Image (cartoon, rainbow, N blue to C red; front, top):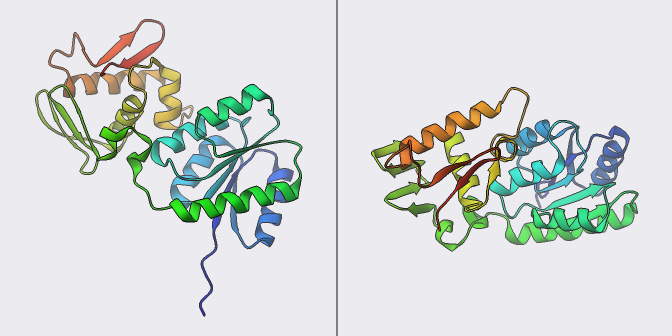
Length: 243
């Protein structure tokens, strides 16, 4: 009988002692484990390595854990994520669950309890793995196609029929559109758009967001100077207005 492939667990944790201790104990349970010490590298490793489960700290250098979580949820609603954080208050847990975390364990924690929670989440992962990108959105968006006004976006082919013709969308344009669609009617600051849409790094500025909004307006607005869908909100950012 062939050995089954190892399940992969990504630990995003800036405390090296905790991270290495978790890696050792998870490895002893038969898991393949990788570690990222901060949020941006954690997102990069998540995309490249495609883990079966993520263990995530909240207080990370650079990109914080909740921003990492929101970025992951834009692409994958089913990947199990366990927050492991010193911020264990009721409000912290509610915020984590509202962002889509599957389980929340406060530090300091019991190792046996941690391993049991990992085992439970991994079983759920085996039941649900293999879903599509858009399953976190509402029913009309699950089908890879989104329609607003006279515009149609096909996420499967990364094309759109806009106000002025056919458009071939870039990866980043698709990602930003998904952020707006998933949060339609909600004001989004430039900072939030950078964190979720780009996995914010120091090389990306708020001006980058503004430039992309100009492009989206040219694609989808009949009159880009007086936008109906991608609206500016003074001193805040932008809102995608489509009910």
